[in-house]
Amino acid sequence: MNNLSIIKFGGSLIKTPKIQNKFLKELASVSKEAKNILVHGGGSEINFLLDKFQIKSKFLNGLRLTDKQTLEIAELALSGKVNRIIVSNLLKYGANPVGISAKDAKSIICKKIKKLGFVGTPVKTNRKLIETLLNYSFVPVIASIACDKNGNSLNVNADEVANALACAFKAKRLIFLTDVCGVLDKNKKLIEKIEIREIPNLIKNQTITGGMIPKIKSCQHAISKGVKEVWICNGSVSIKNLKGTIIKR
Image 1 (tube, rainbow, N blue to C red):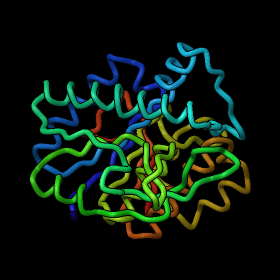
Image 2 (cartoon, rainbow, N blue to C red):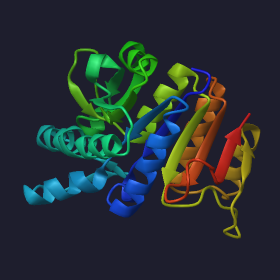
Image 3 (cartoon, one colour):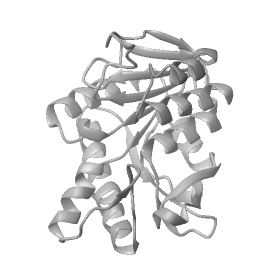
Image 4 (spheres, rainbow, N blue to C red):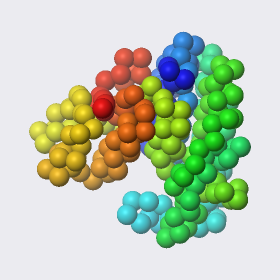
């Protein structure tokens, strides 16, 4: 898996058809030459279905509170709709995708975060199913629904799913595609390269703040577990020639 990339695509990018189609067309192209795993979320689609069923979204520190009904809708949105749309479009562009969720074959086993309801954080990764797909030149497309050790479904942050897979496979690249160009300094200019030893100081001096803190910490964790490099990039720009912030040892 020396040439493996784990790509996380989600957020506002998923609900923008033009950006999504451009990305998937490029992914189909690069997947003919290298192995890729695509991990996706789909919070906007979850919100849409919750509104349709007149269920109010609730959050704690930016994380979705997930009761049983919300979990069912989240799985319907991610595995039943977003995953199917991505797979269908990749097929149109000549790729060989297989859509699964992180709970299939217990690919990712999570510990339940009780205060959030049916939400989990990864504690174990089983490579067998995904590795088999990669070895036969399929592109795994993975929805961020996982399970606990007993097989009970849990909603999981897609960044955490991507990170767990990257660490398990010791991937060449972990790529977070977002709606920003990367990590910015205090003058709002792109920081093109960050070494993991610099991260604590960048957080301390408030160069990195807010929602970028958990993302950059997950990048740091991935590098410490053997991932060669992590990118934070604007998802509307080419993935053939990555431009953004690269995090390395």
